[in-house]
Amino acid sequence: MKKIGIVGGTGYTGVELMRLLARHGGVEVVAITSRGEAGMPVDILYPNLRGALSLRFSTPDDADLTACDLVFFATPNGVAMQQAPALLAQGVKVVDLAADYRIRDLDVWSKWYGMTHASPEWVGRAAYGLPELYRDEIRSAQLVANPGCHVTAATLGLLPLMGQEWIDHGQLVVDSKSGTSGAGRKAEVPMLMAEAGESFRVYAAEGHRHQPEILQTLVAVSERPVGLTFLPHLVPMVRGIESSIYIPLRDEPPVDVQALFEDYYADEPFVDVMPPGSYPETRSVRGNNLCRVAIYRPLGGSMLVVSSVIDNLVKGAAGQAVQNMNLMLGFPEDQGLDLIGLAP
Image 1 (cartoon, rainbow, N blue to C red):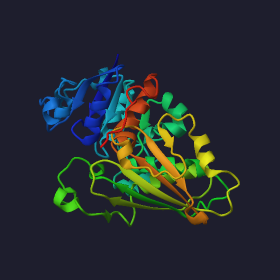
Image 2: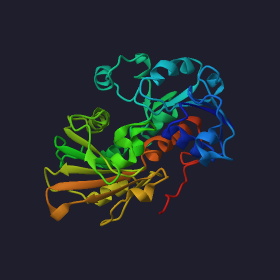
Image 3: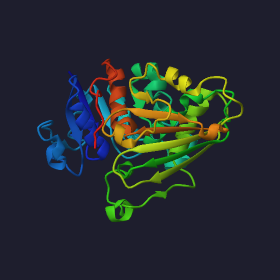
Image 4: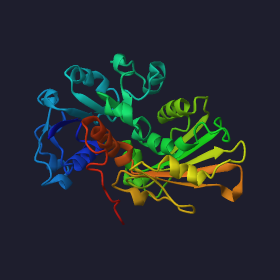
């Protein structure tokens, strides 16, 4: 039984990690940290965990994280880069669910996150935690940077097309919509039900932190410059992301694009390429670790459209983190993640 610690267990990704790990079968969560809730039983803050976990929150100073085989950081940006190196030096494996180790170019990272990186020596050593692309690197990694939620939906919707000469890599558009849980568990007026309910709006139209992260992977895979317009939107639901992705065609595709996607993801346990004419729904992936994609060519014209849906708290965060943990610790990749979406 592997020992697991969670730093920052009071947020939505923290509780989702606990929900998934409680039924994993191969791990035991031995420490969950929170400065503000230290001493409180976990199931008082999150009653859905009653009977599943008997832990109490502890301060980071009191938690014996060095005794863990792997520690998740479900913390705000800037925390893991301060605290993870001490654990890594002790041989503990780390999965960071924030953005501290996602972007390799430290100047780009500092521009978007507004701080100087505290452990730059680990940035180049971190594996990027998208298993569909970097599975082998994740297996041998001590540190994994879990991708962003919008990033996961957009990247998985684009990967099979990257490097194809018949698409225009310079004019990609990702129109992405997410629920309110993507903003985290904090009190903010725009996230109040009376503010977000029955409304739909764009945000960060001048530029979003997930854009350089998406570009980093697309450029690496296609081995050429990529132009990307990324627009996130807030929709009045709790969970879910739908990314509508627009890919201009330079020439007539010489292959069946549906078959291209099906072949690319044929062996992937958590990507479901839907049949022609399907329309992925966020509710179909609510609570599970799947990404569902569908491909369209409206009116047979010069634009491909991909619809990609995930649960932002599972495949977009905690589920993908557990998928990475499984690879890092030698478990079957789908252990603890064989979940059916919630309906209704």
